Image (cartoon, rainbow, N blue to C red; front, side):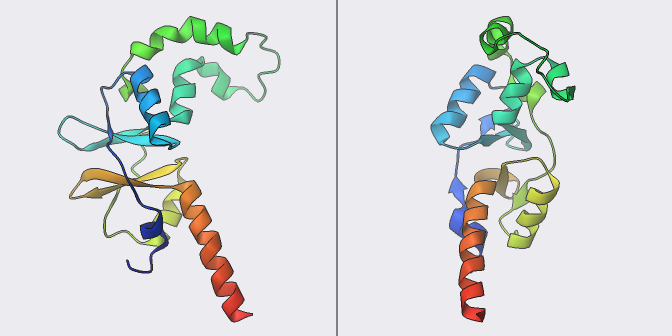
Length: 157
């Protein structure tokens, strides 16, 4: 993987616990400077991903995700937060994105590309023998891909 785009963008992380509370988990995501973090079970197995999208799912009523437009709903964000503030003490488990996107350290750039294209995730968790230890973000992967594309295009032109 010496020439790997993903190796350039790998970020070591401490995963969330699937039983971590939403309020604390959201703060950890922000502190990590990432759009999401992987969550694991007590035995270390991958449980899912919790981040920006999953917090919005927890905060907003389910029908918001089904609407073509929320323009006819006049409730302010503050009202919604007040109504759903108790979700801060719910475990994240209920809101995890559980697509199987975990890859082992032997992954390829093409494998990551396929995951980013076919799943609604902003990160791909990386594991060693099933234990999550790092992530590659879609943004970082995209930036490295653009750099590689530019370099190769210049050499061919």
